[in-house]
Image (cartoon, rainbow, N blue to C red; front, top):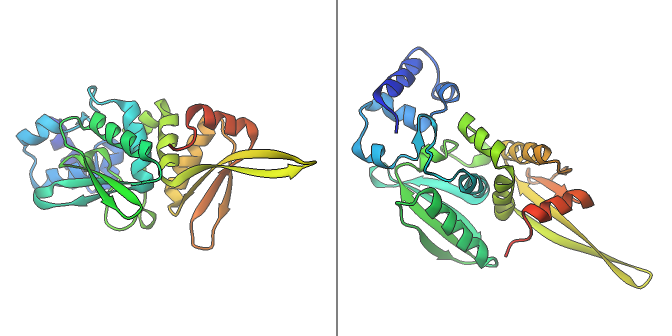
Length: 253
C-alpha cells in the first residue's frame, strides 16, 4: 500500500524527466506501479487491501525467505502474462520428473500471496503452477515485453536487500528452475569414483550475473562456459563448493 503523498512524489519525479526505471531505482517502487499512477493516482480499495508491498518494500506480513526462493523460480522458469482487467497470471513451469518441486512451488506461492488461489496446469512433460493477481508485477518489476534474455533484468533495491538476507533461497530457486545436480563417475584401479557437481544454464547475461554474484557472496567457486546457442553454463565442481551447495540446496526431488 502506498499513500497519496508517496504516489505524488513518484509521479512528480517522472514528470521532472526521469524514466520509469530511474524513478523505480530511486524509490524502490515498481515501474508498473509508477506507470499506473501517471494514469490514475487514486489508491483503489483492491490495491490497498492486497498489494504485497508497503512503502516500496515487501510488506511485513509476507515471508521474505519464501519470496527469495520464488524470485529464483521466476527468473529461471517463470513468466507473467496480462489478462482481462489488468489481472496478471504468474506461471512457473516445473518438470514432472520432480513432483516435490511442484509441491514446494505451490506452497511458496501460497505463502507469498495467501489470498490468491493456485492452480496446476498439466502439459507434456511439465506442470505449470499458476496464480493470478493484479499485484504480481509489484512483486516482479522485472516483468516486461519480450523474453527475459532480450531485456534488462535488474533487481530493485528492496529485492537486493532480500537476496542479501536470504541468498541460499534465491540460489535454490534458480537451481530448481534452470539448474541441476549431477554425479559424474570414473573407474580407477577397478574402483568407481563419483564426482557430484552443479550446473546452471541461462541465456540472460543479467540473470547469470545475479546468480554468480550471489554464489560469490556465499563463498561458492564457479566456472562459466559460453554455449554456441548464446546461453551461458555455470559449473560448480570443487569439492568444498559442492559440499556447501549440498548443505543448502541438494538435488531436486
